[in-house]
Length: 243
Ligand code: AMP
Image (cartoon, rainbow, N blue to C red; front, side, top):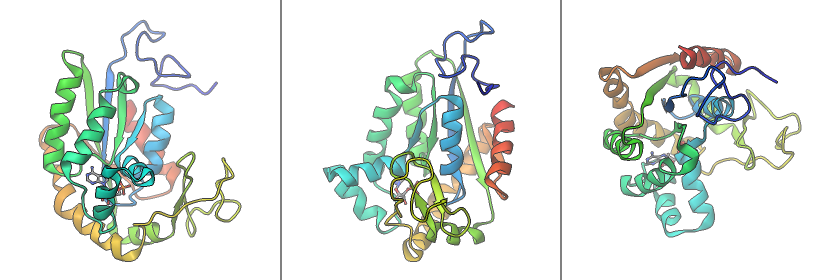
């Protein structure tokens, strides 16, 4: 079995008594960074490694769109333009998730918060859900040169089953357009085109980037150098998580 230095329970993160006899504290991890900075790939892997749920607002919203729910219809009109979906809609989805049993030992939250208003909402949700339970909160910022990101977006593909992310140019699947693990056809996101991507970058710099300073002032932010290969970034991320 692979030895996981964090998860003393090995296999699944029960979050109760590890083999040290110590109580494992709830881990609340959030991730910031521009579109296509590598958060999706790394947080997917981290969630598996820690045995904590990967909560990804973009995927949750795309699932609502696929279901053709009222929320999905509203979300689509914003996502198609590269704009943030209204905070009330996202907060409702997130609150249900974070209050659910699967998050009782913590979460790997990817894509929320994306504005100061959402950051305040998250604080309220955590306060309400955690009560007097102790939790460790960390914000990890993927620091990367945005110049290289447009190509990552327009060549990006992902597996609809396992969420693995590929890139036709930089990380192609072994068989073209097919997931290496699940062998199902890969998908390209509707908003992964040059025009919408530009708008997503504008939205990021206007509304999400100020969160770096917000969390820095609170003393909970760690900057991760997100330039380099997936493996290099993963090793740096592990150091942060273990630190
Ligand atoms: P992502 O998969 O994280 O790149 O998100 C895709 C799109 O979903 C974004 O461009 C937004 O339109 C929408 N979205 C995702 N997360 C949020 C959020 N926290 N608040 C508002 N809109 C969001």
